[in-house]
Image (cartoon, rainbow, N blue to C red; front, side, top):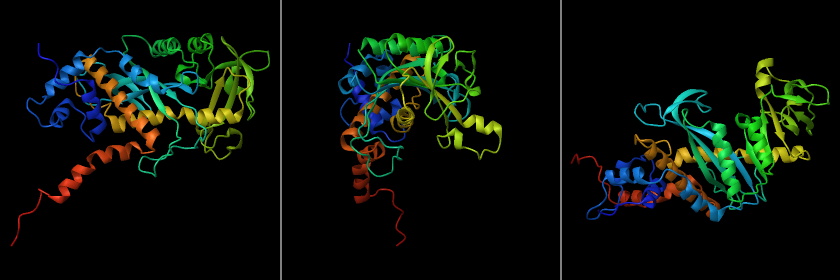
Length: 365
């Protein structure tokens, strides 16, 4: 049997360098010109033969994480596949980007975010000035693909937490949104000896004064937070904020009661000593998972594989995440953005073309 012509690193480096097309066909076209160069089938077979697990990602992430520091952030995103009629894994999912149910693949990620000595209040655009070298690293450590016929999202959630515990993580906080704030998940974090920071829906039942349970939206919550008993769990500290300006108490300019309710958010943690300043910091740092999702889609081609089989899709997604890891670590080390890193790869080709352009108009002389 002939040895494979390409390996996973060949495909990952292609994903790092590619600008618009992230297909096996383009990977073959972009390969170095040499005798017996790989055809697109070589890359397709690569995606089919790799084991569909996340261990390769963890081997690369492990050396750069600090298991006893930083945050573990769990969240999911929908990878758009609007025209995919024959691709396995593709079903209908809710998309926050579109505000609707769309066809795609649902990706759940466990992201480690490092501690920061110089936190910033917002993420700059990729085209902005170079990022500070001290910016926190976003390191994906594990992921799952949700299938409606298989495990639920919450089962994947707890499975990734168990795997993180096996890998000896002791995070500062485990952060997730209200979708994952069910009792089984909260108890799992507590049983692992960790602290969670999450959001709650406005109808979650709490007992604020040892009387009776009521919806969290019905109780008074001061700016500094309030300790309450969460039904079915135990004591937690809750906060109330407005998503527009961070202070629901001062927001008096809403047009309707409905729009005001939509802006109000409820946060909860089992750290009963948490301050409002710490809550605000954690909410800002938790936004890092959205930055990760955006960069993964925009720069690493995670949505763009046309392979039909579930295994090939899984491996393309895995290698896209590993491509992200390379660009992310380069960003942290050099303060060079993803945008500039990828543009620099093709700059020499553009310079060579400008020195000898081939697409010219015929001479009219």
